[in-house]
Amino acid sequence: MLDYVKAAFWIRVPVPGLGRVPVNVLLIAACAILGFANPGFWLLGAGAEAALLAALAGNPRFQRAVDAGRRSAASGAAELHRQELVRRLEPAARQRYAALEEKCARVLQVSQDAQAPEIQVESSRDALSRLGWIYLKLLVARYHLEASRVQVSESDLRRQQADLERALAAPGLSPALRESQAATRKILEQRLQNLERCQQTLKEVDADLGRIEAQVDLALENANLRGGGAVVSANLELVSQILDDGLYFGDSERDVAALDQAFAAPPPRVGDTGAGRS
Image (cartoon, rainbow, N blue to C red; front, side, top):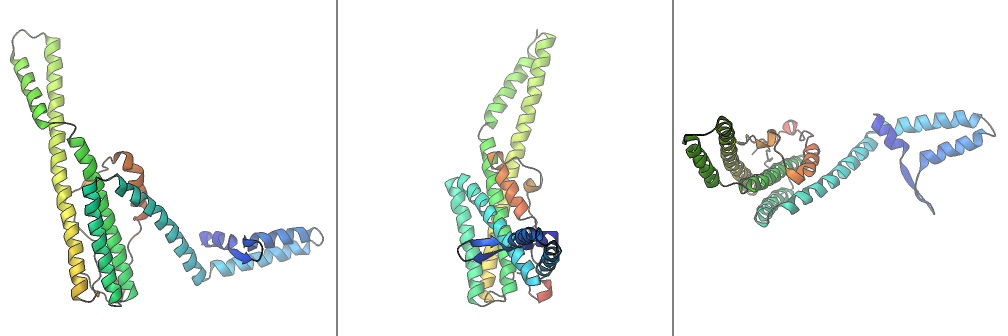
């Protein structure tokens, strides 16, 4: 409620010659000035301001307008972060993401052309947006995993490991040298484990990308078959745990975090509308 009171206090109305001005600020300023001549204006101004703020802040229509403005502002900021993440992808990944976005837009267009209930269209829009964000995040994760993988060659690590094994088997090594080489061998083993885990995670990410693509394809087919009457579901059991394991996204970390926050709100519920899920 406090947020609505603040919004009501700073509401602006168009004034000829002045543009949009904060009417409450002007009212308080006028009463403050008049109060020096007659202190009753201070009491009158305080009462009028309290009544006006209470009426506006408690008005459902005003609250919806305030909520819509916040969503619009948040959506605009999120869009800038999304565009930045897309820009950093490789051309092939950008094309793949654009293809998914196009299909999502077609799902919504079919629903709107079929004059599906607005609550169903909005629920599908939210679900598709969330699927699109998961898809983009997976593409960004894949980009950084690939960048990490290409920096090291498994064959080179295996060769270094074999060289160390031969060196450790040679007679006459001093205790200090043997200890140093044994420590290096352990490091190589850990690097090989990391490389293997990276390759496995890449396979899981590719599987999840394919699953989201299939989900959107299904949504488009259902929209065409049912005249846009099916609500899209964004509930997926992803194979990869990469999105929950705090993967380092490099210079994309800030944009990823901002979009995560934008999509943190729960999707709208449509269970009470009787709409089915695809």
